[in-house]
Amino acid sequence: MAREFQRGHKAKISDLTPGTDLYVGVQIAAPGLTFDISCFGLDANEQLSDDRYFIFFNQPKSPEESVQLLGAQSGDTESFRVTLDRIPANIHRLSFTATIDGAGQMSQIGPGYIRIVAGGEEVVRYAFTGSEFTTERAVMLGDFYLKDVWRFAAVGQGFDGGLEALLKNFGGEVAEEEAPAAQQPQGAAPSFAPPPQAAAPAPAFGAPASQVPQAPQTPQPAPAFGAPAGQAPAAPQPQMHSAPTMAAPMTPPAGTVPPPAPSPYGQPPQQPQQPQYGQVPGQMPGQMPGQVPGQMPQPGMPSPYGQQTPAPYGQQPPGMPQGGMPQGVPQAGAGLQAALQPYRETATGQRWTPQNQQLMRVDLTMGGMPVLARQGSMVMYQGKVDFSYKGAGFAGRVVGNATGQEMQLMRCTGRGQVFLAEDGSHLHPIELQGDGICVSAENVLAFDESLQHEVRRIEGHGIPGGALFTMMFQGTGTVVVKTHGIPVVLPVTPTTFADCNAVVAWSAASQVILSSQVRLRRNAYPGHSGETVNLQFRGAPGNFIVVQPYEV
Image (cartoon, rainbow, N blue to C red; front, side, top):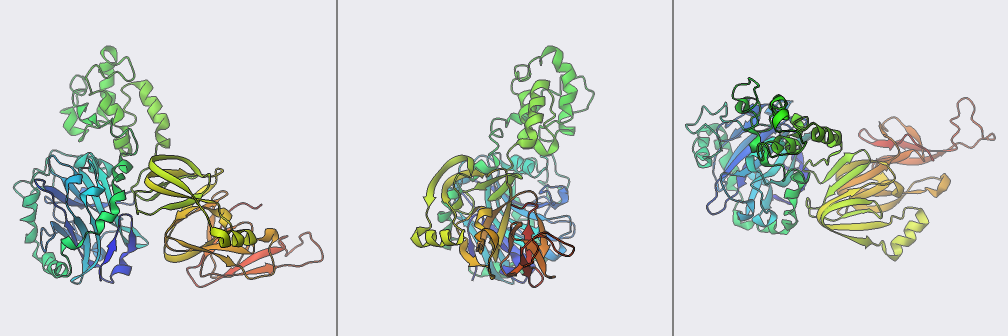
């Protein structure tokens, strides 16, 4: 039976199916709207570093045919064949997207889905509806990503700017014509106008199609997927990528055209050549000489060319990866932006995103589940978020007080992003997928409410400070662990000893016992560590401990 995913859900492909030759079907429709459905093959930095892995109607397959566009079939608006074994090592993520060709918004769409079929049987489906979106014109539906093994994530992340914003997010460029456009007569791909024709040529790929038809013939009636309604919390998702609040106001990048013209910088059609989508990293500096005398005395004065001048200046957020920052039109402004650039908010489309070593952001709109965080750890939030006290109950308080593992928690719900930190501690998000980890309550900052947690006893006679117990988290979700300094992760296949005050966490399957060294003399001597009590860890390969460079 196919698994039903909600936005933010993830799973290993191997847990869904042992197959690696997969069919990916997308169903999305709205009255009067036309959609372009594509697949981006991204590198380890989530950038489109090789245009040959942008799979769309004008370029229906990757060089080694690991990703192929099949066209509409079996109730799917568009379909792909993905052969994981053939994907080259430089591709770490496949992002399946849908964009509106022309006017319209994603809030107008009806029930839709992205699904994976293996061997003719549907194994997973992520369903969505227009109620989850607002003004977006492009949306990332789902990703295959490599994290030790290939995994699948239901994304549902939108962009107001449509295809152009999507390409900029992936480090690509909107060109006047696409190199691979030789296959179709309409291959001029200036605006992805003919998605319908994409369906026609796609079926020509008989090999993949023959395999795929079987997959869709299993339970695919789209109507059966009313579940997406439960994912309504996703509406704010657009704020994620437009979260860097500057993105919206700075959209007038198109206005970069005029500046190049007046500048006597002998660059040929300055716009088409260097800047592709108005970001003109090279042109702006060229224009400066010509504009400073007459037009640009002020750092932010857009008067000379209306919106043109500010466009490159504000273009920074969208074009960040390309260094749009140094757009030194107004030198003072550029200097300020350049100085602040390293500290801008990081929005990756994930539920948990480290902003730096000491600050963590959680997006409550992804995953649709509340977050439990240590009281007082919230430093700021965006959107509509409710904070409430999370009590442990009478029994929980008794156990917490008796074991030293009591946590004063708050429950974060709503639609927005919450930023968490505490005492400048280093923060590390640990994603659990059915496994478990042991962490002392004092080292936990926050975790998904979906995780189960309980107090676990450590075998032994006693540890200084009464730390006889620890917290064990297990299930599917993320727990954020605090450390003093950057920790080290060690395997415990060979028996490993660690100071109980320096140990932060360990895998739940590890065997832990107390190791006491009772001596007549308290000072250290050759062969003695000077520690009276240590923790001894051992376990099968794959088990580990996390130790911080700090001791109370």
